Image 1: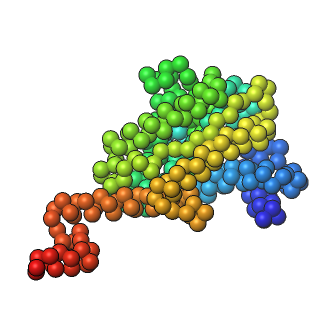
Image 2 (image 1 turned 30 degrees about the vertical axis):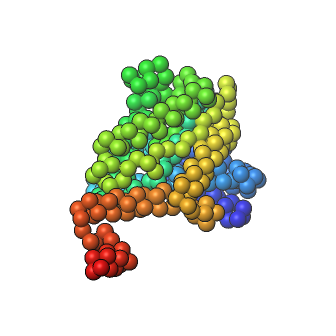
Image 3 (image 1 turned 30 degrees about the horizontal axis):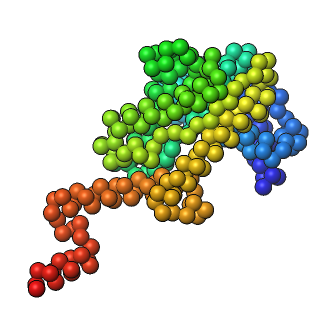
Length: 306
């Protein structure tokens, strides 16, 4: 497993070094340094590298479909390196290319992970568009909680979409404990907005949605390398613990064995059951026999015949 991680990371590093040699993400990295990392460091780097490589692939795909001049293509690329078009937040490239000066100007990191994004995409009535609604709503909430708005007037920061269901916030003047409290507020606000805007249309309530999150303080004079190696890893470990606990709670509620089901599938099963119960209640309220099982129909018939 370790050797496979090293091989994948070196291959990705070589690809980035060839196409984006000035990228700050690969600054300080080398095949030798990657080979010398511990297993936990490799896993952490692999998570970040995977987000960056997905962004690169998306850019290549978009660039190949363009017929504009070279200058137009470069302008398009630079714009999309900085902003995620669905959430409206800075994207993975902006986050992983933070300078040491930018990092040192911040006080706390909050990592956030959307619950059941795949379930929302796969089981929604709009067949995939709901996932975009979910991400866009998350972007809106993060902007509200980092822009000094009426929701949180004293705390400023910058939110990022790292890719997929993962987000990050860097706060200007905020403790680790305060960052956690903001994470909970974001969770409640996201659920509230989903229920108001999309729950009925998508046939998915906010019950299995929301976020898991983890926070870490940013020490003074921290190096860029140690920010990603230590601070990021601390926040990541915290939100993964929360994600596991959340999945176990849902498994207990649904009567499932948490050892035999992945975190990703837990919410999908919950949404499926919730939808089934809702449809069953609707059918019963309409007085249709379609809501009754074969056994129930036979019991009804026997009662009527006697």
